[in-house]
Amino acid sequence: MHDPVEKNGSDGQTPVGRQEPASEPGTVDETVKPESGDDELDDVESGSMLPYPVVGIGASAGGLEAYIELFSSLAGDTGMAFVVLPHLLADHKSQLVEILARHIPMLVTEIENGGQPQPNRVYILPPGVRASLKDGHFCLGGCRKSG
Image (tube, rainbow, N blue to C red; front, side):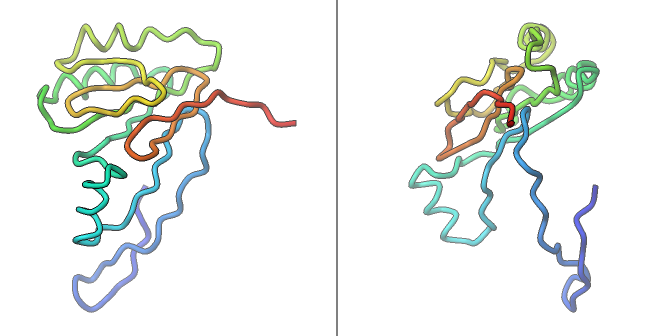
């Protein structure tokens, strides 16, 4: 899906505001600040932002082969933390941590509440849980049915 663009005089394309998806089970929420020179450095120093990228990757239950292909083609020292968001039923027992750990060069672990994502690692969202990043740490919460 492409961001809408608006023509301008300098580079011909300037991204227009993105619409953020609503928080749903199997998602990671993070408020991303626009790039702005010194403010970004201040945020890193204060601990509210991480000094390395955190990459979110999602797929349905049939995405195992795609996960393996992607991660096995990456070096073990990318300098990025990866968060895998499988779309699984809340009561499904996932073996994704164990399966990926056998096939990829990075440490694979399930997301833990309060944990800080580290570079060169893969974090797996447990089934039936919502996750967010707050001040550079994972926050987990169970899914709740409304009504």
